[in-house]
Length: 242
Image (cartoon, rainbow, N blue to C red; front, side, top):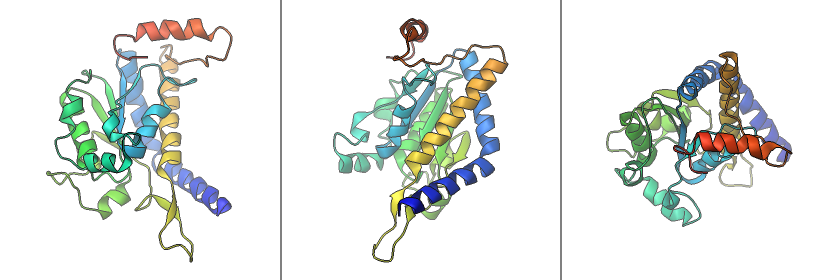
């Protein structure tokens, strides 16, 4: 099964490289333009999707102006089952989104593989109202296989300005076995990490080509990095809490 999983992940990455390449480049251009105009990248996901918002936060080799919206009741550590229940509540997002410092010209990345639950849909809508350009990372196949739980009938891909398809299968799991009753071995986290890091890498390249020095963290374990990083932290201190 180990070799099967690696093979499936590799194949899925190839699909994304082939089918989402143009979308990823277009999204990277939006991010580049936003950061060159003092914008910030906000990210949101419920449950396991929130892991990807932390993946790129305060990350060596990663962008500095990254703001994950970490609403703890929707994460796993305060109660995994409870987080799933809350994600299905219409209008719940207003409780924590009202206070978010999202401004005209910012980028909002919303992650939800199934795309059917109300909270990510509402987060996308509220971020749009605040003036952000909203990118959804989701599975179109998965979303179209299940009815929306949002009162509007929308899935995440309906609610955003721009969609990147992670091509996760229905249910997210990649593998099956004759002796196992259900599919297993999820795909969305490993694939999502590749998508979002690749997206940011392309944005960094585009900023540099425009003559703009990309705000990128150095590893704190490299001598001299602290001064470099502190300057960037101070530059974005009014927008990103570190």
